[in-house]
Image 1 (cartoon, rainbow, N blue to C red):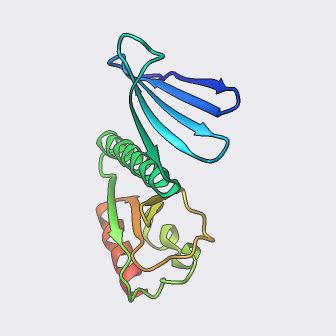
Image 2: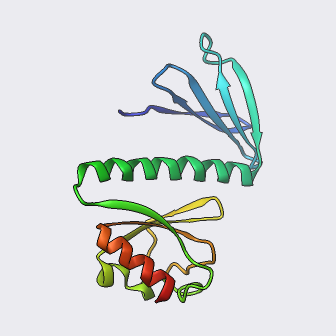
Length: 162
């Protein structure tokens, strides 16, 4: 399904981006030139009348974007898993004592050693999608991996023991 997002310039204020849901509800995000953000739910019968407005701090907006992005990405990966026999996805928490904490992802040589792809890293409520080999692992990172059962078991050992 294609989703329609409308962009409306608000002179002297900033920009509003509206999304119309499949159920016909309009949700907007108002981004002020000052940096303020508001999440707005519009009246069903009057698309110009807001029924709810929620002010978001920068941290709240970032956390909400991370939640929505992570759930969408993981849902897409789950759908891919259903389509590809033998292909699995897992979320692995990087052990605090992993030899890769503080080292770049490329040092794991994950794909070469295990056949597994690291497709995302979840960190501090955010998502780092398609991380490059230069990404430095931090304690508590959750690594999203895609591969066969054998490969996933192997990457668990690699991340835990090197």
